[in-house]
Length: 409
Image (cartoon, rainbow, N blue to C red; front, side):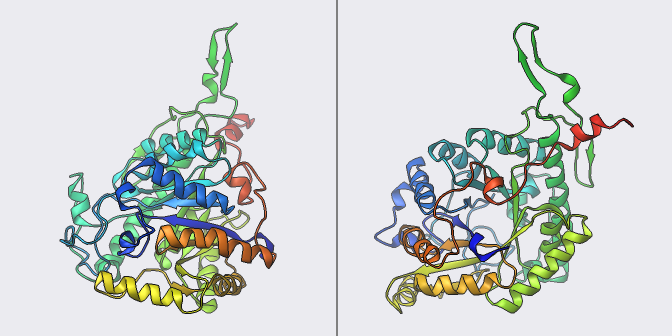
């Protein structure tokens, strides 16, 4: 991929990714659970010509990063707790935007692929073809208890790094791959021209162009067809965060975009190579699969100011900030240089997590983007009307339409 086609996304979560972000004067803690707040964030991201936003979600209350893996919600009252449903936020704000992609997070472990398929298909309709999803898994016993359908073993502080955690992660990620496959089949279950809408003949649909998906996996089965016509994009984009080999396999098998949490060229190159290998094993070598670097960012124009701000926020939080992703604190020009350097390792874009949304999101759109444009590595205008087209992904034909047209059927 040419460096001139660098892709950028931003990850939206609460007041920002630093736990003390809500205490900053530029933050709006009283508005976190309002539609206007989220609409303003996405409008700012679109102003910066970003490819898409992701919206974080979960099925349990947030906990501090150092909180034991198997414990319930922590007792801290000085950090943001609670969130709105990401898919519903996306559906509310999508009609207020024109170009930017909207990608809510969904937890595959405790939700049904049939429900999710029609929710994201609906989002694709209300956004006119700019929907996607970020799939994740959850093995927390407290979250499982909300649903009462399955239980998980205690993993302790090590979480997925323990042997039992690795085994469980393998199971959940394979289940997530099945989940995505079922969702994709449901999106394809209506052919593009299944809707006739012919008042004269009284035929609204061609029933022969609706198809059973007949998916059967270890954890669930789905017969289909969907109750929602095929989405405008055919297939909304699917993305997933990966921290290592097991999730790399999910990305290679099932995703259009993988987010890798690496901060240097060597590790980025290794992650890209492993995902490409998994992509080939899955028979997808000829498909476009984007690999984005994932970074938390503190941005200020003056050298040293971002690091000083990070330290001030750490003091408010009572502990140094840590993340599953690399943390960058510096100037927009320094970040632009880092992104250019990392892109030479095979990364096709970046998903940036603003530490303080009220401060760092405008710094991205109004400082970083112009710097990248000046260097000739980022667009100066939106080039497509759908998210797939913006990412250079073709609109796929329905797999069932191809089967129905086959003379062997």
